[in-house]
Image (cartoon, rainbow, N blue to C red):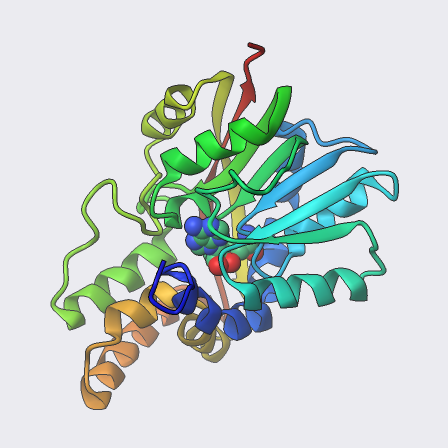
Length: 282
Ligand SMILES: C[S@@+](CC[C@H](N)C(=O)[O-])C[C@H]1O[C@@H](n2cnc3c(N)ncnc32)[C@H](O)[C@@H]1O
């Protein structure tokens, strides 16, 4: 916890919330089908109670809430209260009344009093301080045989738009990529390591598969603004530079994005890893 009673990373994610909420549809619209695959891997069905970790502005929470229907519930968790505010209003705008929120780090659900039939986490686990603790915490609130399914970003080679632009940002900032094991976009991109984390937390019937996603953004301007406003990772890397040096970095990133554009539209293949496991009966 930081001195103000907040978890140490909450402020970073709170400040990212308006940008994430603004660009979520443009970015995550492409992930709707992968999200359905995640809900399938967690065996989410009508009437279930589901925990959705690191919900952000809640688009996958909404997909889960539609699937469980009015007799089910989705508990949307996030470390950032501002993300939860967006998730709540987006669920209400979608006409849903079966979404509730749980504020706090996914690594600590011990005081939540939850017991859920299934759990999901889209594009969050690789950013957590301790994915291992989060996997254990979820297992403790899952019913026996309940499944936890996550989507994380796959290898840098399979996600060229983000890996190449991040290399440019790191070069300008004079920084190196985060060492293996520390939080980051590609922290869990090794399928064997991801599966071993599930197994070390006591999950059985574990599975990891690749899911292809085609990202499409209306223009190079949109792509740059989205990275600047919604992606805390780029802001964090370039944060120590003065304005001139930062402008130079964004100009080179822009040149790189141009290589992914065709008649203005920016598109790139992405690969996610879909990992899941069951809570073993005791
Ligand atoms: C890349 S966003 C993904 C949001 C959403 N799941 C989606 O796919 O649109 C990552 C989210 O993880 C949340 N987050 C980061 N660390 C967390 C933690 N330790 N516990 C819970 N949420 C966390 C952030 O606040 C943010 O909303």
